[in-house]
Image (cartoon, rainbow, N blue to C red; front, side, top):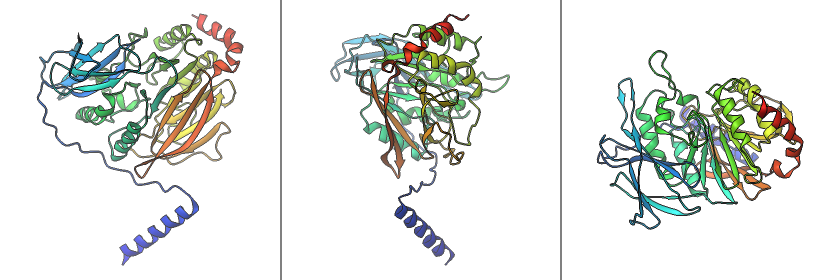
Length: 434
């Protein structure tokens, strides 16, 4: 009788909410249990790709045969490989865990907007990838804090259906949290997408995995997810940059030193000094911990980085800042120094990929004047840079396994607004500071 009463009350509340047009958030889902996959030890597993400088792509995979070669064969027709390139491999141990052999091989030069077929290690299945276009339009899929739950799977399914060129992930990938086999299951989970389009990632707190006196931080992350830090003049895999079409993307490290005396700060200034807004009129920045956050979760955690870095990004005329960490969605107006500013950046938090920790439901009320839209739901973002002046951002709620566009906005580039002319002297002064 009691169970029937609970059911009736629940059904009444559900119908009432639907009648009012409110979104009823579904319950959390458990961590996925991937079936055991019997693959020969020399065959590639956990394949993913990333941009590695102009017209080049890094192919990463794992084998459990330590002698397997780090070669990639590739071409523009299935089964016909016109090129073969050798790379490097590494491995690591973490307490009682030993990784497989992690291979990194850079292929290229590649043609823009072209499908290539490739095979890793000289055997195993054939994969295919598509290179990004040389010019606008270009589309990015964006989501952070993925994890490995049922919601992660549906979020990835939704991303797979959108026509995107590059995936941007602002930290918290596998949620391995010291359990190293979860890095392996995450690699298998994302392989269908990550082997076909470049995944550009930056680190989150769940990647750190530091054990004082025993293990330095980010060992697993750095070994498995090598990004083009060397190609962009950085000394650390935790921060780097790259160009796609007419967009310059900077991936910063929320968990690397960032004060004015740090290597990251010096690198950022050097990187910005080389940006030509005529060639890349759009400037986009990603890092894990958001600066503009009206959720009660993780309040103030980005303040130190914000104090050091925000003046630099503002002077450089950054258009858009994407972050994760808070397990919810929020979009701001153009903002700087805590208040709306037409020459500031739009800040968007997309830490809602599907992680096992669940959603952050509690927001500050009333919302700050700079906050435009916020919702505690799983989902993903899509950023389509249409041309040198206009971009379309949309956020797609993961609504009972259906992708529902719930927020969108047209964004005008600062390079076309007159803001950069006003900032030239300010930027020059910051870049020349020692």
